Every structure is written in structure tokens, then in C-alpha cells.
Picture 1: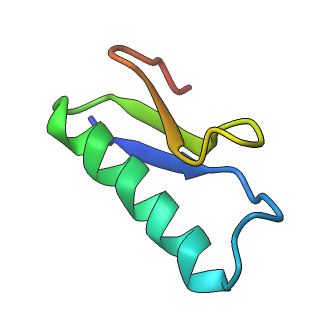
Picture 2: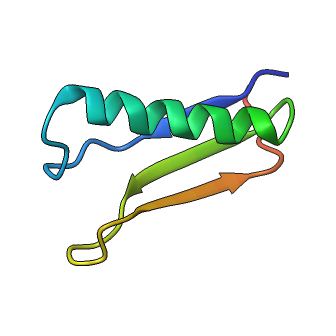
Length: 62
């Protein structure tokens, strides 16, 4: 099964490479869980200054 990493664009990203880095983080997190995982990464709410990661261990993709 394939894994996927998803990043949400946010104005906090100063340059496009920050967005690409966030997507890479999500993909590596999904791969770490094994096949069939999806990981989402997006900036934390204003003032928290960190990235929030969520993952779902078993996602069915038709």
C-alpha cells in the first residue's frame, strides 16, 4: 500500500521551500508508519510557532 503526506499552504511560509519541507515531513511521517498511512501537517494557530502533525494509521483509498 502507498503512503501519502499532505501539507496545507499557510501565509506563515515565507518561501515556497518551507511549504515543500512541510510536505516532506508529512510524507516521512506517513512512511514511518508503514504502508497505507496518510499524514497531514499544517502550521499551528498564531502564536504557537510550531507545526502540528496528524496521522491516520489505516486509510482506505479507492
